[in-house]
Image (tube, rainbow, N blue to C red; front, side, top):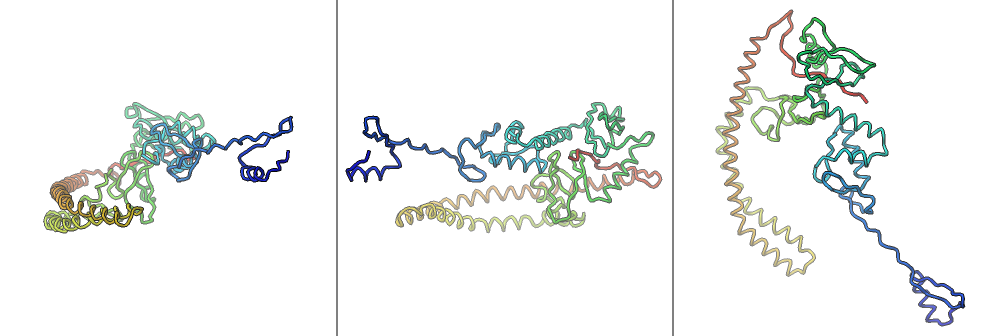
Length: 386
């Protein structure tokens, strides 16, 4: 039905997207409001910072953090590719539950199989009674609870079945001691610049690309120093151990001793000078930093309110900054003195004990046919290639 009134025609044109016109059997028309599309509720992903509908988010079971499914898949696949089985949550570091890995990556069976192999290998490498078959491309592990009493092991894989030694992890050497096998290890490590992990004894190859000496074993997750092959903490390179973060070799005994003596003699002057410089620096920097943050935060306010708030913040921080400087110096100076005069003498004593031990060991080493009886520090562990 055609409406003749110009006012009604204008109204219909103006609301044509939000109404529905129906013609009734009687010839009249009915105007009803069209259903409005509901807005889609979205949430921002904490990894890619993109908005997605709630349906495209996945919830991690251990920490209840949510991220978009695409980012979670990429994160899991990257960690497994880097041989990291204990996959951390991107937000808090809590380990991702294995069920989450299988749930959100179930579209890739090959990846799930790879994750399962890595998980089994990571668990077995921590078991002291587990031994990997040394045969090439075997990758079969045998758990032997009484391996020290009966060192001869047979690989249970039907296609393999070789015998190997529980002690040295090499093919069985009937009638000969593990000394000859250790010499094979020593020859291999001389030809290839690899060193054993101090925890699981897996050989690790470090590329000569200028990287640091802080190493992490991909199997047992042990953190150790490439120079001294000892498990370390974050303070290892700050201690007078002689190991440097970037160097190719540790300091010599003479250089380390001179550094230790110099630390004991010169530390008081250095600590006092640092404290004297720190006090005015803290007193001046605290008001400046607080004023800068407040001024930036009040950017949407009026100029007068912004200036008054900044001035009040600077005044308040200037009043309390001497107390902050006093607390920092009062805690920092005793800590520095305690660290210097406890750690340095301890390191000197350890160096002296290590020197005496090595000297006695060298004197007591037996040579058979020109071959030293000194035991090796690591073993070769064969793992699945695929």
